[in-house]
Length: 547
Image 1 (tube, helix red, strand yellow):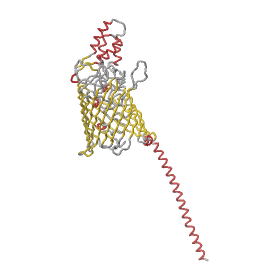
Image 2: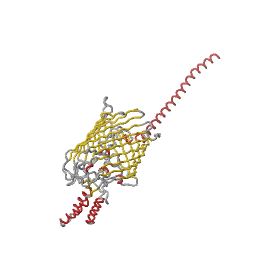
Image 3: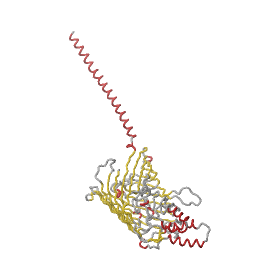
Image 4: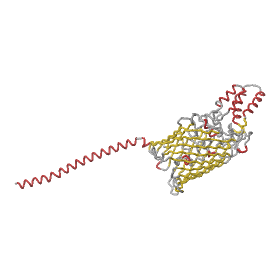
């Protein structure tokens, strides 16, 4: 009996123990499954939060620059045609309108115009300490799949000034005042301007095709990134020798994968340089448009090659400038003896002997540009890396018979239609990067008599150096501080010092209006609308922070 009870107990235990173990294991598995589900739910919540966080879809960067320029120049002698031209227009429209004796009017005009046409001997303009602040804020938003929006906001102002006039001059058209193509790139005021704002749709129909529209990244193109110490421009940039102008426009690009042409892409670009507005009776001014085709056969880290063609249609005579730097004290002084009404006209037109407004009044023709260039980086050349570039451009003007106040395309007032003019420009440079974060560079450019480019937004104080009809040399040194980047991997702080020397051979650098004249042959009998600089010097230094 006792033996059978023991056997029964053993049997019960044999059955009960596995059943209990199985129950505990099942409970443990249930707990694990529940915990796993909770972890998955938590992971999903985190992912949803990350998807909505700013860092997931918005990138923020920018730069700050303090700059000191010490500017010295020397002009050639000339006759100031600006006061003469303004005087003639104002007098004919105001002073001679009332009915009166024609002989008396002619006598007055003779004295009036003789006073206005001032003969100006050679002089030496200078600004020994020009301080400027520049700040830019870059935003890149991933809006939807394959669609991004890029925005760059910025201010650029002179210390102690809200007009930008201390950095403006009557030496060159691109620095006579701030206009649509240069705002944010030459000193103006402390308003936060929109430098760039464009949307890009990539991978259209799952093909290597993109479309982009808006305020374009058509400034600060290659190879200016070497001197500015920034990353190489992407496929949105434009070679700086031909175009450095803030355009509103659009681009259609194609980047197929070609084994023997690494990084190949091509694009068609369109931009509007001037909007003429509503048309009225007698308003013949047309819109100014630009069309370009870029082919980049190779775009890799060690080598980039570019080919470019642009055409400007219906080129305007003057950009729309709210206030310009044509200082006309001689104009007002000459008009004073002929009555307060006439003097008032001069004062209004000259804005109190300054800030004469300009607007496009006619279209002068079209211009073709052709360019080819390359830049390369050679690693471990001695202790450092060597960067080099060379760029070549050709301009061809096609004038019509129209004339503005200052003349036609490549012709002076009264000369009539100029023949097609061909000019060329070259731009070359080196930069050697040392392990100490010291970067030593030098650049040289030359432009011929009829060379014209579309680069008024270039980062130069006197005038866009790549537009010079003559020679420019520029050595510079950059010293980066050995500081750990925090805001991004691209963050850096550095100092830069440099020197620019301009040797002008012909008048009208950067300007398609007027017939270029050899500067060495100018006299006080040579009528010009802008003071002809013979040479210019600029010693500059910057402190810059990129974040």
